[in-house]
Image 1 (cartoon, rainbow, N blue to C red):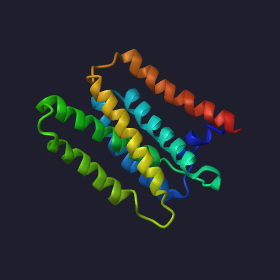
Image 2: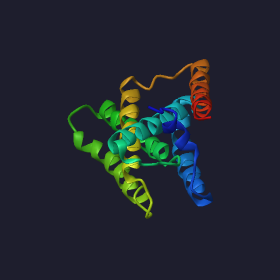
Image 3: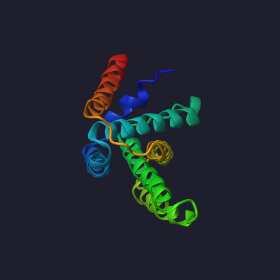
Image 4: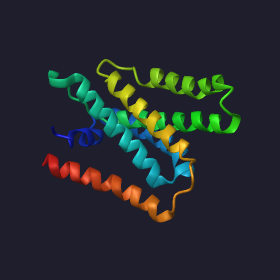
Length: 174
């Protein structure tokens, strides 16, 4: 029942190398998403996927007392958003016939998830998977909406919503 933990966990890291890895790969995925969606919308989708991934992970683990930390759930959510957008772009550009062309972005995303998201003894592989799947769904949904340009004020509002959610989560934690 402590919803805020799914957000605050994204801000906590085990050590400097954990933080650095999340900053590098998260920054890379946001660098690809921001010009396409606007920074505020990109952050909203990525943090939203991380939040959803952590909620799903907590639900699966239930009362086992599992603890998760780090932004990697959101990082893999960002990868999922990219893959979802690309899969829909393939459908929009080439029609429904060559569905096999959708396998390329999906396969590339799954390969990156397997390569980057399963390394290490204490890696929360399931959280990475849930983040990726949440991002995949939100990226595909956004792509199905046509990726229409969002007004500048709406992009700013989306970015502000991310900050507001994080501040509310940390206030609830205190």
